[in-house]
Image (tube, rainbow, N blue to C red):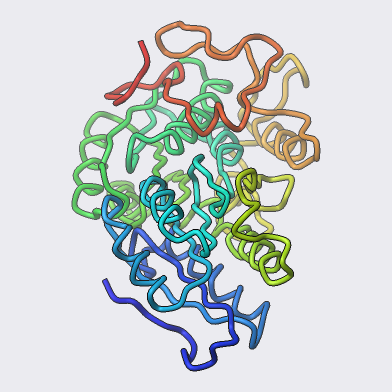
Length: 370
């Protein structure tokens, strides 16, 4: 774990900004996306700021790294993993003259904001496609940590998959790590042995892709993901949110006194996330034929191809306000408990604290409500 400055420290007039990463910057996913945002931030404000970062920070040990950044002159600190939340809030109390922003959390203070470019809409769309493409009716999901963020994405994926094929089951293995290729390999091989033929994952290595492709004799399986390529995309909101936030700090709009209610929650409508492994390519051409051939009955559109359904839902969720949300009731969890009443859509607060498992999910679910 090395603290790395990216510009000269001698120019004291520049705003110093620190980034704390949970994984290595070459992780192919989450941390890399935030580091892309950091680099774009520097380009957006030439000569006005300098950034530095520390990578591979254990989530339970973030405070010493924040201390070091503040001692180094940081006036803005971004902490980029859910597990950094409590440490960020504690540091914000110790350093009232420093601005903090925490990614994916929900706790704030007068000098500590929250931000997130969330993928639950993307996971729902990927679920629609996975539901049409699975031949065994068994989908594998390799998850990092059983936290609300990952559970939200997994639930959205399951709701999408079962909207196309109610017979599907989604089998989950947890890594309890954001980056552990050995555990990811073990989990993927176990799910393959159980008959899964379609995969999704939230972890920061390409291991699931590599293991599944080898099993598939080199042919690309359908592998929607958020934290490794092919993923929904490196989130364009990583730079967009950073540029917007820091721009407001430089202008004096954001201060150490007014961040209590600052919460960036950017989705498709804000162009914060994008469906597809390549910019501008929502659906992989390798699967276009099968998705056009697969039909599904809907109350809204009648009988429609899954290909067209994905594109219509994408268009609906890209509007502001959205015309469709995956978490609109009625929705029951896998135990049959009503979680979202008819006509109600889950709030951001509910989404960021959700713990229940959607129907069709099979496997351990730590923290599952009774």
